[in-house]
Image 1 (cartoon, rainbow, N blue to C red):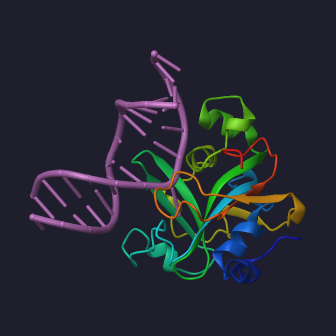
Image 2: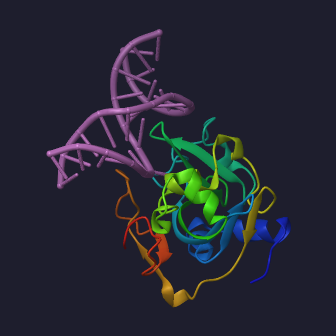
Length: 188
DNA sequence: GAGCTGATTGTCT
DNA sequence: GACAATCAGCTCT
């Protein structure tokens, strides 16, 4: 699938989080010439006890009620940044891992390591490698400085499983990934 | 206003 | 396999 401007991008994200989470596998995501192919995502919906939006809108989760395709960036455990793509109001998809494709030298520099498999295999690592922080909160993912291109992965290669690191709604299999990819944060 | 929690990661055993 | 680091935002008093 070819490049998509803001209009088509909005249509892509204005769907159920589960559909967007699966559809994002195989897409290309970058920032200032640094990025790669999305290989792992998780879906969060308003009726989901594990979602930041479960208890309604607050100053922190306000971007989750913004336009579809908006970036929701929040700090996790006081240390790390996590990047989400906003879908329908109150729902979002957490980008958990990408396969480094371009700007790899800069990723290695930011991460302070040479092992490509560890550059972006986790939400915190991914944000560190791409240089994403709170200043990118609220920005549209389909417009500069973000670079976004849709590309559907082979449906047969996409696998699903339980989400990672949660204490609530742990049984929902709302995590999606490229089966067998060495760039996943964890195996399925 | 005080206390608690977490969509994580890196390091040590 | 277990745990410390670290803090914004939420809940409860």
